[in-house]
Length: 111
Image (tube, rainbow, N blue to C red; front, side, top):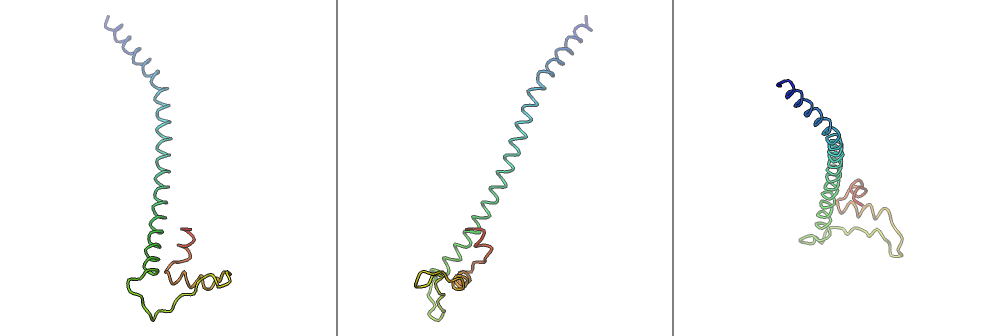
């Protein structure tokens, strides 16, 4: 009788493993997909935080230049990038950007 009980236990365990295998495979696939999605979201979050950091840094530099605590009367005023007739002056824009302390790469990445 012991061999019949052992055989029955083994057969029940085999059938249970067979039934669970399909469900576990689907669960593993879902878990893998979710891990991939989480990793891509983390990469996107890091990229956005970096852009935000650069934008805040530029904003702080701009605020310090635009609204200085004590105006210096001896500092030469930067020319406006737009002339009196509304035409764009690239040299004046470059001077204005340099006066604000913004590099071309920072300006290109955060615009």
